[in-house]
Length: 168
Length: 365
Image (cartoon, rainbow over all chains, first blue to last red; front, top):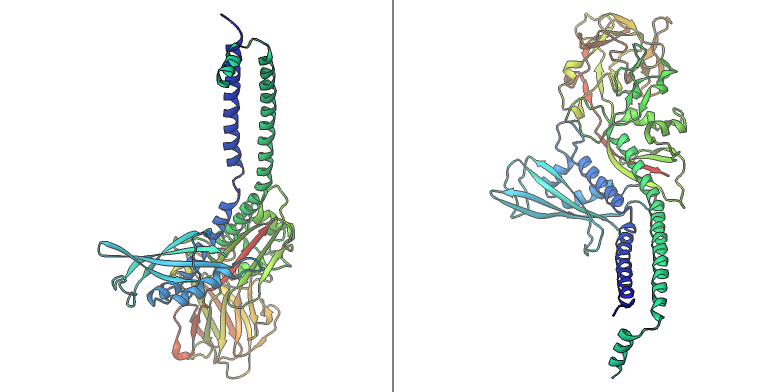
């Protein structure tokens, strides 16, 4: 027996299929479209600032001197580093800019192992919910006589200073 | 019970109520398609709004890079004549000398040190460039847009530098609007200041007869690491004269490479300044036939760009320019060097100020 019932169900099935696919497309495409467009710009600004601050601190201010950054690591002077870093990072011509927090770690190689120690921070507890950016710089340390135990060997070496920074 | 009835109704009904559901499906499909198109477009609309601040941030970033990392650039020739001492030296073309070309030939105004050596730290800027850049009397508002902002869109800008050694901050541009999205970038730079030598004017040899020569030996000055080198062609050089025992006058200042010439009547040239930095008189003392009295702490300042190939074409093969001063007192004088090592027993010294940190910020909207 032939009637139009089958035709009816096929069209409904096809229509439902089209609807589902277009709905899925709509959901996926709008999700991509609505991603906050400039969060990576904020990351970029923070990363640029962090790299600039470390580069400036790693520049000797007088001919023949070690850089301030090298001295802070040599002397394990975490408060000196913190003050210097926050001064550079938080100085701004207008209020509302600045308020940067940070935490930093030094990585070094000792024989075949890579070790690390906590170096300095801004005194803030990281909750893990901050929007953080990592910057790092290889610092050449000539005279490592006072490393925190069980720190690196006493030899001229490059250590990796990693700074995690975020805005308040 | 009702299930069988339902099945029977679904599979065995023969009335035309099904036609309605086709209409419904078609209508719903058309509606959904229209809805999809509209919502897709509205999503795009929002992206368009967002991208404007993204653009501002990108422009601000570009400006920050040009200021902090780029020495700038100038079109160094007009026709076949070289007007620039150096291709990066937008700051060394003086309006007194080339009024028409000085701005027209400028391409970018960067503050960084020229990259002659691979190990010049990227964030070192030169103090005379920042002074010139932030001098409100120097350039028009729109001129900055052409040389550091770029783009067809008429961006507004505010650029400021805040020294971290307690100095006065400087800025160019319009006040930053509070109720509008702006692009922003902050860079940290180190500022390199001009070096000076303190020289003892007393003649220990007894042969100088009032003539004092200060040699700028370019080869010897290139011995330091690039970040701390003295660049006599590119920077200001300062000579601090001491040990005048009796009041005396200076009767001539000439530059010799190798023949001695009067200094230029316009900038760039050599200045004579009082110990407090006040300009006593500039250039060309001898043609005017006037002598200037000098005292302990009198400064001889050479403008950036003056001791260069542009004004002394023999520089290069010769590698040396002498600044020759003549005093009226014949017991003064001698052969001196503008060099890193000075005669400490004569109370002579070389002094290079420490690099100072500064925060450079740019807003664009």
